[in-house]
Length: 297
Length: 170
Image (cartoon, rainbow over all chains, first blue to last red; front, side, top):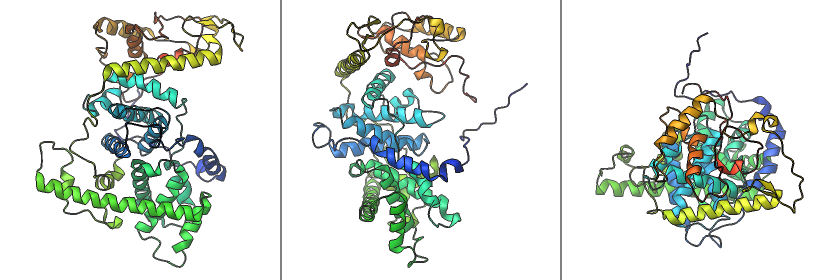
């Protein structure tokens, strides 16, 4: 018998499983256990002496870029950030080791979630060889120990389908909404202010922000409007006020991120095109839209 | 996947400075890192010894133990829990790789293999440990047989389960 391998570079995916997505118990279980995987402390006040919030953002942005370049599954980056935050909540870490930690966290998250995980070598190259594969493997053990081997953390991404399915949304917009929600979740993961929020709240807020941002709620304002938030809040048992605040916070972060992105583009356009080569093509866009509908996916 | 890349890149372009491949916070203090690693692993091992009442270094039960330990012949241990179960081909490749190891640590010549996640394979981890003097829970001889699984196994190396087929497409 001859086995033919028809696998391409694309991963074959299972169809959405109605047993998982249409059963309320799954969502309830996720909501019950999600708190177990939150970092225990706001670690910049206490545990960490050398690391500042902006450094977390630097390493997070780098990790996101690596995940994108390597076309990782969407949940790899948020999961890796969950590991990073949980580790930093208990272990005082020097800033020169922060990138190593970020690489280890991606390594673990990728192994947990992907059929073809990132390799140690690849990750080391992304640190510009400032760490060695051997160090990565050693620190993998250290991180695993500190996380008590609890790697199957609940991420905001776990909630997306559960939430989206419970909303009266036009079928043809679902894919677009999912994309936006995933983007917002990734954005939240780069921002420390969201690190202590339960994943369900980030997911719910992101769905709310995506729907509002795409103005899918404007067709029937009277029906959506406030009631969108009410409905969302009900799905994940979040308090309406808290959820509203979370959604607004996400929107603010989005706006400031877009603005900073634009400023940086202008700066870079003024200076040069540099020898770095990579990533410069997107700098050609004359301006970053502030309306999320204009963000071209 | 790449679906959201465009948005990400725009929204999160704030800190983007040049290529993704970059060193963020300067050089790593390797010696310090090694010291911290050894200390951390040792501490984990001590905690495990304490918890399980078992000295994992000498592979013997502690006297003051809440557990009663009992030796089990290796053949009775389920395959999954046996350490270093390579098939012959793998053993061969391990030996081959071993020869390539230069005395300097960290210079492990990766066995050339197309497999994506080869750095995680037990051969290399085992090699690495053998080369370390200080690794406290080291398993000296990465032999084929073992009498009993012990917890240190989990502190050493992830190992591939026997007979696990290669990933298709690799």
